[in-house]
Image (cartoon, rainbow, N blue to C red; front, side, top):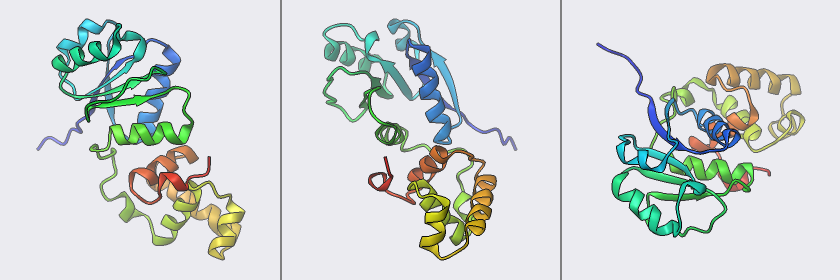
Amino acid sequence: MNNTTHKTEIALCIEPFVLKMGIQYIIRQLGIDASYYYINHIDDIATLRCKYLIIHHKFLEKPKMVHLHTIQKSFKGKILIIGNDKINAQHQSEFLLSPNENEKVSIEKISRFFSEITPAGESGDNDLLSSREIDILKKVALGYSNKEIADHLFISINTVITHRKNVTEKLGIKTISGLTVYALMNNLIEADDVKS
């Protein structure tokens, strides 16, 4: 039996290198195992066979909404548009993300865009964590300090640190933003509750 994991294929039509790397970083933080197709010209979209396209608004010709509809005729997957332009999403497959939005809103929108994907290694991850570790994970994801967590849960700071270490080792996620994304993706917390 072949146990190769299937990578999510994502096409990126993004020109600024830093923006492209930032999107890839967020996707990795969401736990999505992805392979990327880098599109340098809008005409190449017609040949894509992947389910996801992330495109920078500068690749859309004017009038942008008309051009977007043309792209949708050839690309049947979901499209995420990055840009400040006010492009009204008229179909469920369209999403708009402004590069000026804060971390919380950006992660929430990208999470919704990839909502049907189960993050790599997620199956059963919550079963690996004890109920106390889940409590700690929730508090960390909500932005509480070790002392605040200890005070809320009536445990010592050393116990909080031990639980945090266990959570990061079990999940393989070392950053607070990564743990926050994990908690959001697994419905352990609500996006509105996260401290900005």
